[in-house]
Length: 88
Image (tube, rainbow, N blue to C red; front, top):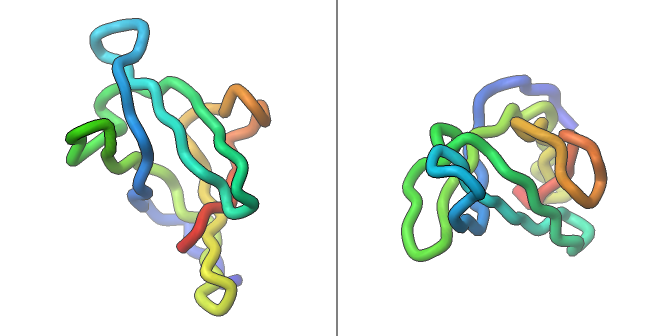
């Protein structure tokens, strides 16, 4: 994997959060598990029909294995971690 540490956008599923400035987000990890969390609406762009892009920090990218290690803006409910691996 090559180190990166840059702003990056990943595709996610979105829905309304508990508050007007909040969005509920879910995404699929590289191992197929689904995780979910709430984020400030400003962290989402191009939202339409329950899909959008989430701002994350790209930490490492492995093009040969088609995976990326990213730092989410907040912890997921399922893993209690901000660190996740997603498909590239």
